[in-house]
Image (cartoon, rainbow, N blue to C red; front, side, top):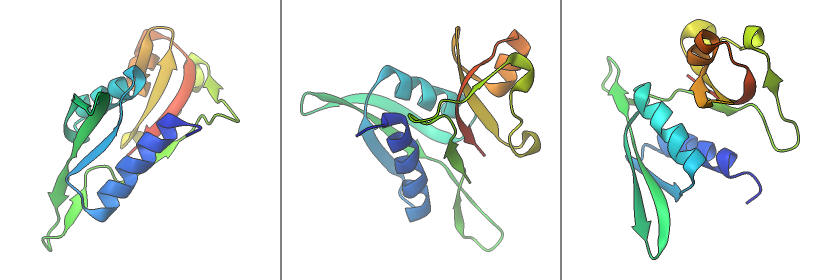
Length: 134
């Protein structure tokens, strides 16, 4: 696996489209931090880091809402990797993107750790744009 963050985002996207209630993926500190930000922003139901056959895995419970017709729709409508392994995208504090006119959010890797776009703007920090979620 070349890019574990892209793999995480793809697993979440595919599980949501398939209607699964839970998704498991290999654990790392950065993935756990990303899941924590998604939980704080109310995009997922919960997550936990567990040990499975001697390896740590992250289990993410996806969140859905029902529309007027009773159809189950995932809370995460879209998730997109911005900075890729072949092309890193860095932004200054005044160039931080607004995702879907404020409906979504970006996750920025700064010198203070992973922050949402609003937190990075408030702190006056730029950094690498990891992904956008809406």
